[in-house]
Image 1 (tube, rainbow, N blue to C red):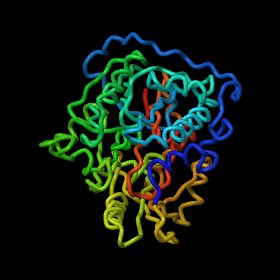
Image 2: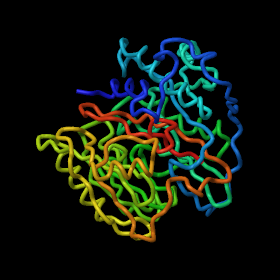
Image 3: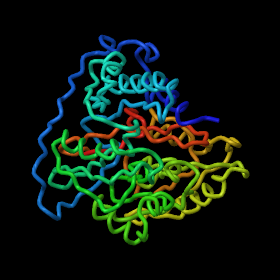
Image 4: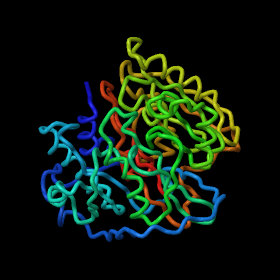
Length: 394
């Protein structure tokens, strides 16, 4: 059974080919001198003045241009065990070194682990001392947003250890620290959630699981209407597609990024479990029904669904009818495909990020999502091939 620890190692070894290339001799040696020179901008510690109200914040698409990738270098024995510490550190360094060939990497590091990080990470990885509990920056970090005036801000969704299931006193400070280092105002939401619990297309449509956001261990007493109003206010959303998910089966309570992801506006890749004995069997089939019948903010209806030729028991089944089309759309992306929601002819938009690069390229939080205990899966990567499930930052 593949665990989150094993998958982290697979990611660091360059799973899915061209999406993330491992370097550094398997991650065991020093990264200095291994990579071509790449200037890493220093963070700006002084926060910028808050913009005027009614700024029209919007969460960008993950494929938009960005300034950096954020990561966390952490492997506490109480979470990962003593024997896993070094392999985890090596995997994180391999990921950071691979990304830093193409863009800056900002790595939060516990003070006690700085010397280890310096030995494993290349000179292009900028290490920032900050006390942290775990490495899942996609969940613990802030979500960056921007507005039409080019202003940026950081949204703090009040991380509480996936519903108080893990110690998180240090990780609860990460979002504010990122805003401080980036020099943008911090916007505190009334909701408790994680970055892995929301998926957006950058144009006003989001996919969210009820099992996570509407869970009493995060937002007791909050209705779906209340959550929608707050998410629309903080992230500039116009349309939210709700998936049921499953609570209590993993530490995330069914994050969206396991079940569905946007490839571009109107196109969704979704997980499908074909094992009738699996607890995810019924819910993933229900998700397909909801997604193929959903519309985005432009109210474009779905055109087709592909789930033929599936591989029994595989966590990410591969539909032969979609694979070729996906490779045309995203030549550097590989992985299983279960369903596609497509726009009507004449309303298709170009590939993610085309013609939509912001005036000020955003940062991006490194997407080390928390892999679920007891699930077999492969990580899906962002369309740019620059990180593992990164969260877009303005």
